[in-house]
Amino acid sequence: MAEFAGAIPTALTSAEAAQLRILACDGLVLELGAQYGASTIVLAQAAHWVHSVDWHQGDSMAGHMNSLEAYFTNLRRAGVANVVSHIGRFDEVLSLFESYRFDGCFLDGEHDRASVERDTSEATGSYQIHDIACASLAGGSKSEGSGALGGRDQCRRRSS
Ligand SMILES: C[S@@+](CC[C@H](N)C(=O)[O-])C[C@H]1O[C@@H](n2cnc3c(N)ncnc32)[C@H](O)[C@@H]1O
Image (cartoon, rainbow, N blue to C red; front, side, top):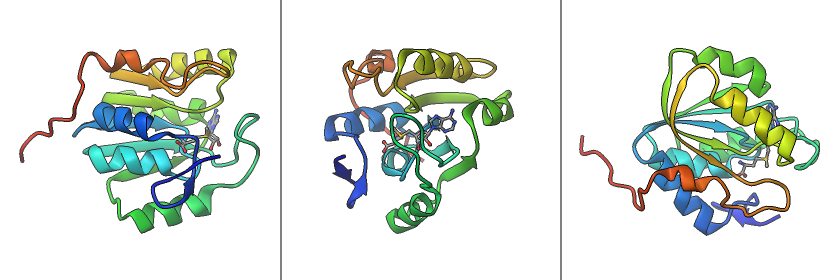
C-alpha cells in the first residue's frame, strides 16, 4: 500500500489525487470510503465541504481493520475542518442526504463489480450528484469512471 499526504496509508496515486481536486473544486462533495483519510484530506483541501461516509471496519478488499481513530488523527493533523464524518454503512447513511445536491462524489468502497454497481446505485439514488468518480473495478483501470468529470481539467475556485 502506498503512502500519501504525510505517510497516510492509501492506494491513491498523485494523478488520482489531482483528479479528485478537480472533482471537489470549491464544491459540496460526497465521499464513500475514507479508511485512513488520505482521499478525504485531498478532497477537503479543494472542496467547500465534504461529507465522508465509512463504517471504518474495512471490507473484503481493503482488509478488516478499525480505521476510525487513525482517520480522525490524520484529519486533525492535516488541519482540515470542512469534513462532516458519517460513521456507518453506505446504505444506512445515504438516506440522510435526500435533500442534498452534491457537486461531486468519490466512490471508493469495495471494488468488485457487484459492490461497485450496488454502491453506485445507492449513491445516485435519492439525491442529486453532478459528477461521480469511481476508484476502480478490481483489476480495472484506477481512473475508470473519472471520465464523468465532465471536461473540467483544472480547479478554478470561486472568489469569495
Ligand atoms: C479502499 S478503502 C478507502 C480508501 C480511501 N478512499 C483512500 O483513498 O485512502 C475502502 C473503505 O470503504 C469502507 N467501506 C466499504 N464498503 C462499505 C460500506 N458498504 N459502508 C461503509 N463503508 C464501507 C471500508 O471500511 C474502507 O475503509
